[in-house]
Image (cartoon, rainbow, N blue to C red; front, side):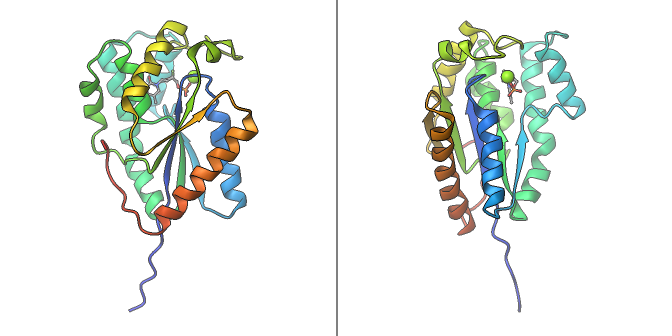
Length: 212
Ligand code: FDM
Ligand code: MG
């Protein structure tokens, strides 16, 4: 019989402190892959377009108060509500470039003193990324960048704790890039990692679930 298997897309996540440059690198990477003819879409968490996302956005703007565990679970729910759509896209050959994912979920909430294993538990069963690009920047450097300090978590002391918690989460899917390099240098390193990842997934690397 004539069975044409579509090779799956890659789940590529960018992580880092606030103002580490993730969002710019995500959009540059998406354009680059598009130019190369690779089917790709951008997404980000929190996804503020859903009703859960709006609750999160209001909280981040300091316009509402929520218990630490409650907001943690909302961030997680915001990924769960996208899970099946993400799986469908990946299985249809579309790569996803994601600005923040479960690592943000755990690193930020654990910085408030919540137990790290408790924080990881609701992420279990989400799709595991094929590649996590971590843009490493000293919290002090990030704090000097434009636009810092607008939202709830953009405070130096807090970001120092987040950086420590990110360190505890590093695993074999992580590639760490120095976030203080020029935009262009970072961009080319991101491209190289992403292309490698896309080709490995195309060759049939299985899609797995969190937590790895
Ligand atoms: N954040 C983001 C969390 O605390 N948990 C999460 O699960 C996610 C995805 O939300 F300070 C925090 C990280 C950041 C804030 O994110 C808003 P963006 O990327 O700046 O919109
Ligand atoms: Mg931010």
